[in-house]
Image (cartoon, rainbow, N blue to C red; front, side, top):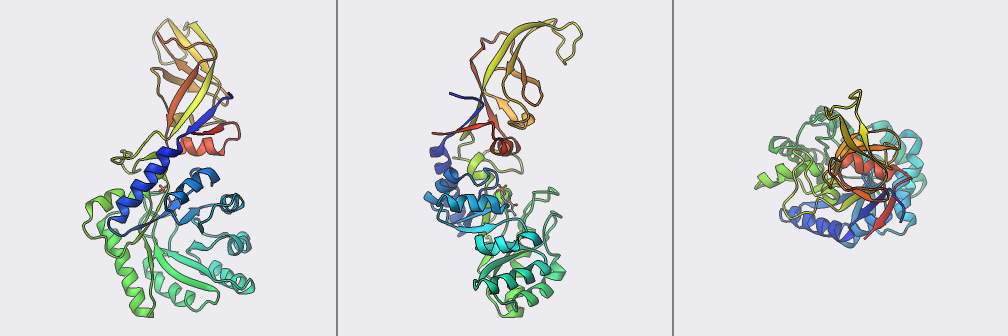
Length: 341
Ligand SMILES: *Cc1c(COP(=O)(O)O)cnc(C)c1O
């Protein structure tokens, strides 16, 4: 067996997907599966689809193409606003995109007409996160233009919170989004079937809300894969938080004399373990050893552990839990082998 390795428990992820779907479904909220954390990994994307997710969303067209090439059967959504340079690819590879710029929408329209397709769009509204979004007072003018653009079909509005500015989804903001939907439908005599309220961070709002208003859609990634809600970082009841385990191999095990006290430890001698993994494989600040060892530090390719009284030896393995950013790095590293169980 080769290391470093990420062990992926497909049963646990299946369970998480079914539980999340059921939870949000209890108040008629449909879930779009977000695959950017796992870089559009087709095996995992298939697990989402097998467990009832009909639409998959990713920030990158490369990931969407990868899933399609592998034969993942779903509707595909582009999460990040389309770039000017990728409009052709968006129209030919993606069913729905999230948009904020009229100049981009006009080009999407042109290319959709040329390709003889109808491209679905959701307009994103800025509600405090200060990442992507149209300012609420500008939404009228944009909707007025979008509904006249050929080749585009405005299917809804959405917002994204808690990703950049830490602004959390709450009843006031979700209610505001519902009201904007209602207002636009009346003013332009249209119907907006999708009101997409946010991401995994909408968990607390959802649990605390008897009435979710017009919100009928969320885009979920982190909760599926890590079993947590990102606001407090707490685990969601009944979900697995350990579907991914990182495994690496010990390549040095020595008792070292700490003459100059390089590290924070005051001990004169300590048992030091070197593990063959580093920043090239994973974000070391986002991994947590399962064994009783302490991470002292890391470089590109070496992880140093303090392991007083531990029995780890050359060739032994060390296992770790991971947070969002660490898992993201693992999926972006060509050095980490994936093992699906
Ligand atoms: C990443 C992202 C999501 C999903 O976020 P999770 O925390 O993984 O649930 C949803 N919407 C947008 C626009 C995103 O960029």
